[in-house]
Length: 66
Image (cartoon, rainbow, N blue to C red; front, side, top):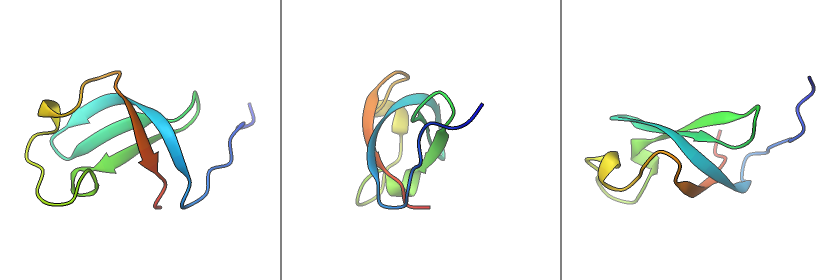
C-alpha cells in the first residue's frame, strides 16, 4: 500500500499520543506514520514526568524536525 502523506521537515501537524515512556511520547500521525517526541523536545526547560502532562489518546500538535 502506498503512503498517502508526504511529510517534510518543518511541517506542523496534529497527532495522537499512542504511548508514553520515560524518554518520550509515541505519536500517531496517520495509519502508516508514527513518530517519537523525545522528552527533551516536549517543552523549554526540564521535564521530569510526561505522564503528569499527557495521556494515551491526547491530541497534540507536533513539528517534524528530522
